Length: 392
Ligand code: GLA
Image 1 (cartoon, rainbow, N blue to C red):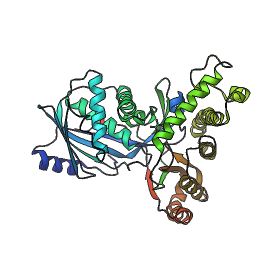
Image 2 (cartoon, helix red, strand yellow; image 1 turned 90 degrees about the vertical axis):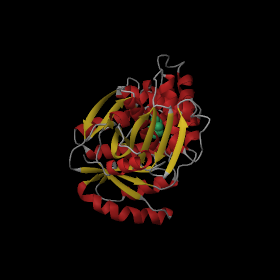
Image 3 (cartoon, rainbow, N blue to C red; image 1 turned 60 degrees about the horizontal axis):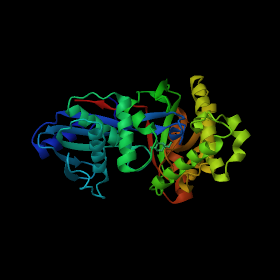
Image 4 (cartoon, rainbow, N blue to C red; image 1 turned 90 degrees about the horizontal axis):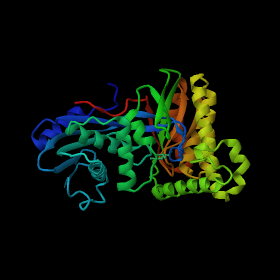
């Protein structure tokens, strides 16, 4: 296994210390980086993410009293609740445990008879950096609960349950990308996902030639939840306003760039800009897959760059720190393309970097970024990792 960090020993010993036994099940669910296709997933569109070598791990054994005794190694924090009383005990400074509660809620809604459990969690996905720490927590939670009752959830179903938990329990109206890639990711591949049909194609990422380089702005994401929900309703508004001219459309995914140009005058300016981003981003994803398959990295990188400009100007989900980091990355010779990744308003950038330029990237980008913003960046180089799995 090539995990950056394998916390088996740590989990086993903490579990033993707390509960006096060896955990019956251990699961892992990875975070993700999206290469291209941003904010398209709640418009029935296309995305192209990869699972990363950073995961949330959970080790657990069942309890027969309906209690959940949880412990988060990252925060050295315990949390106790039960299968029947988990909502009333939500604690604001225990955000991690709310995701376990969210999975209890959704699994019970779906009729699963859950078991109580002792559980220890440990994670290497940076929190709140746009690498899907929440989706990986939810997917790992779904996997551990189902493992303990002997249920094997189909990974697409697992992703859908995790998405519903985030939408209806946590309250952010997210798309399916993060949960899907966490549940279904494939080692050394990125997944070209059709978020309407929930089908995908695993596209191989070559062993050498380029590296996926993630850089964290270390700007804590503000506003993201409310702005996210606003973007979503602006997209829905665009569909409603375009429908008289294009009666067959169900979502912006159904609007071609040509149709958009013809009818965009029907939309108020802001809504028009939002819709333009989605329509052109879907087209960029399709083209980027062709480019990657043809090993045309220059084209792939140019599409990543165009994606960032569109997210910045039309969709307005970038920020000064993301723009500065993208700009710094692009000054390095051998960087094919750089863009923000994830929901935006802070978080990380992703760059496609030629092997021989990676060292220079690591050396020079932090200085350039510091000079522009006064902040430090954290650089993370990752291979595409396998999706969620039960390891014991
Ligand atoms: C967040 C959401 C995803 C997706 C991205 C933006 O990560 O969870 O569903 O919408 O933002 O592409």
